[in-house]
Image 1 (cartoon, rainbow over the protein chains, first blue to last red):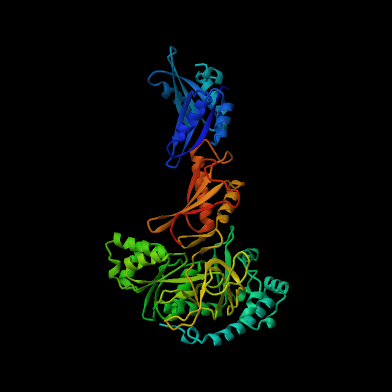
Image 2: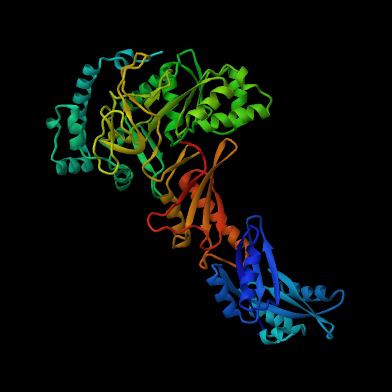
Length: 147
Length: 433
């Protein structure tokens, strides 16, 4: 099963918090590959895909942030209209609940884009099978980092 | 009007005699009927017959909120439960409330002290009194209610809440006395304004305000906005409820109904009794109650005693308005809140108590309590809805324990200051003292 490690960081909803995270990562020469921020009116959760998950987590924890780790799928999606819709149809057919998804972006010269999908931990295996059965390629962490 | 001239204007020497007799009787009563007091009195080496003057009070042991907690629920009752006709409860320091009880005679006595209170504020049987203190386990609502009926007022038991209706009834019924927390009176004034009702034009004359600390400047604001005379009334469930002391129309200290509740002021650190005029912790000994008498109950409220005669004619000793607490208890919307209660809830929800802090502020006229909780990795979840569910769960559990709704705010790790000694758990942004 190819999954990629993702870090989640708790952020209070006040200015400068996001900058603080990225400053710390910059200080440690950590290059963020993908990110998204989920917000509520009171707090946000920053999700990050980074090359050295363990070190990055340590850096952020030392800086005083609450950091969690979870697994996401990096799935290859055709980079044309209907590409994402097709993948989502596959997941829906197997009643797979997508908690959230965000894009890494198109991969030059391949006609494909990489989308990160988060599903509940209990159905990681089921989801991996669903992707495999539909011939949707999921990247390993190594592959994603080398893009 | 003076409700009970005989007792409120009694010559001090005669009253002292009465107090000593009653004190002796009460010490005998609790020594024979309440294991806790029996033990405490034995350890202090004092018995009822040793009590010859009020100076002997200081030989008696103190009683604290912890003693009530340790004897939850009915361990300090001096009569069988069958003789208790009413139970009231107020905030405890943990998850359990502080429980008090009343016999039929105690209820009658209580009604008398409240009638005195209403009289202190200038109330008479002709008044229409709106009781907007909470009715229920809290002593405020039912306390003022029975006292109002005893006085012969027309009592309107609105309880707290439903503010638009309160204003409408105040206007339609021609209420002349308003009994509620001081902040609620200002809130009602705001609601009235929003409704286009000129509260100053109503028949309201007197406010009997208590259950929370309030300043002279707040009094001035209330008197100006509502066009009433605003009186401070004082009490605590452990002693009887409201009806322990009340300001008279002089508004210069609260007359303590000392023929029933003997006051002392002590140094909170040493327990030493302080002379009149010196500020310290208020202590009360109830000498006429049957179900739940207390000996030298430490209130944790700071005040001082004043023995100078009062122009109103009452000879009852006066206590100054409360200036603060010796502990970290705060009052939010008339409800006592102990930080330790919050801790109890957090422990149960999360098994370890995360770092937390209470912020109390005013939102308009009403108090708002915010509980800031540091996110640590035990409680952090990648899913927003899990964190929101946690916030809601904590809010519900706190409401069950405190009786009020708090705003729950998750904050980043280490954003709550650590301290060397006692944690600074409470930030009170209101100017109440």
